Length: 289
Image (spheres, rainbow, N blue to C red):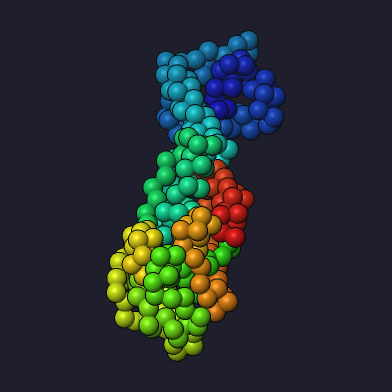
């Protein structure tokens, strides 16, 4: 189609060849193959000039529309590579997602308003590829055979804390063993994969006076003096800084766990993915230090 349009608009095979930077012979062969394929003569040619047949006029008009649509499609794909647009589906753990990731996603969307974000918060283990997620934030060590790209963006530190009023009434524990004598608030979504242990011993008492599947609710209970809390530091940092909660036993907690951003290996060519990766890598570490 491109060769035929060039012949029509330039008026000759030789001019079309110069326009397309190919040989005149190739132009002639292409037009002959096109006429054979369509089983119709498109051009009437003589020694002085060429004219379009009725079939040639119809093919020329259709070719212009097809080539314009093709150029528009190519421009759209090029735009997707250059300018972030479209949807991003992201998975994160509940506490991490609500305290850090939601804010980072909101800031990203302010920079790139054509990107629509669906953030799913859940403490379950999601299958990034099978469930159609573009990205997932995962806490903890990753398996060596994982079929995803991973980039470490920070650390997930835990903290034990209690309200000043509770500690004044019940005393301040000096060792982990003393926690069994205290009223402890328990996160009920802990399981064998994410519970904190020291060898074979639980780092948090099995028996709790208050349990909940939401870290923010446990934080409110701790602020009200209901007991001691073990939760991510990023959830309790402002309360500790303001003196509403007192951090306890800081030197006895295990090492922080890594936080990784995960994505499929084949998404680098699209701008929304590239920019999101760049954004998280540059912004997340200061939130997760």
